[in-house]
Amino acid sequence: MASVSLSVSTVKPLGDRVFVKVSPSEEKTAGGILLPDTAKEKPQVGEIAAVGPGKRSDDGVRQEPEVKIGDKVLYSKYAGTDIKLGTEEYVLLSEKDILAIVD
Image (cartoon, one colour):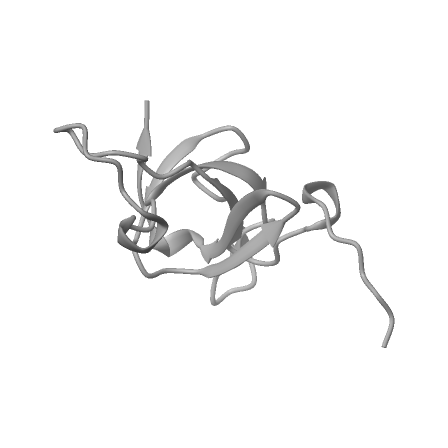
């Protein structure tokens, strides 16, 4: 089997998919208690790293995605496929799983 080297620049989402760089999870609680890796929650905020061309409507016209590269977004907790490239974590998910753009 051939080895494939993936990087952010080589990943091109298809259709209405987006590639999100996951923000780091909190290391400690508001009270100052350090959290072990097993107790940390999966982050739901990230930055768009790549965007697909958009979904096709029933009449064949492509609909532009509402997000663009660089947008910070809030996405569904259990949505998408987790991908690790080097030390960075990413999620490949459908645009419909994005809940909001965060300023």
